Image 1 (cartoon, rainbow, N blue to C red):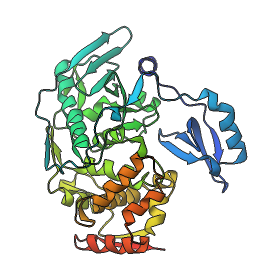
Image 2: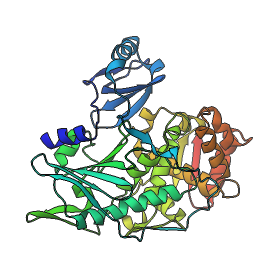
Image 3: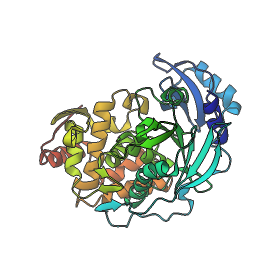
Length: 393
């Protein structure tokens, strides 16, 4: 616990309030901690570490009163941090990448090593790694390739994925030697890594990076791979505008799945031709049986409007179907809609960045179509790829 406290301290992170029972307007209950309040919504932290946004209007009167009484105890993002999109020009007009290759030697700097405090800080070009054990620079270089390649991939997609909190120009990564400390810090027990949205950090147990103890030091298994980490790193780089009702859920998770499912090896993402990988992952167990959502090729969903606008707390309750379909619907707008140029999706994302309402701006995805007509277009497009969608009223 000491190493955990140090990590939280050096990153300026705030802990949530004590867990309590919350009740929504329909009488449903959940145990969670109040993490923060943002306008007309709150973010609750569940026992498994997930952070769930929830509209204040849907909470009970007693819960609403509790939020108002505790607003002063909830901290905003840590001082000294800023969003990364302040100096990065939007790239909506950039060409679609075919392959992303991070071929450079990731220069790693040792910022601090304090064995007494179990505080070790290393940096690569875009990331600061805060660890509770000393790592050889060669080990940090080994896994920094994946972080930097994913950063390059996200920034290269012409979708303005320019978000994320930075401190002194770096995104924060918390690394834990012991999986138990990772869980105590809020990492879901069944996860290989997690993005903590209110803090803007990604937390990772060293085992997920293929780092394991050998003698008095650590070595890196370079063949170790995980779709979880690119997924969470994509969340870290996704602008806050894309985390609102409208895109929240189907797109925010869909684009993270899209990046994670793109074939990766040794600093290279093979973007061209990755449509088949999306289908394999969503419908089966992925290419070469590397995991997948296993939905099959006949997929039933509720009405598209209902699916897109469901509360995020409901979305994450059924991760297999919702994440898998979020991936396929996001992929539809990227590759199969209209002329296959993501024109409507880009218009939608531009509107979000212009502070337009996320729900009302869905009209840009419809582009004159009804939701029923859009459902028909999705069904038709995916049927040509061997996936049969059925939307039910």
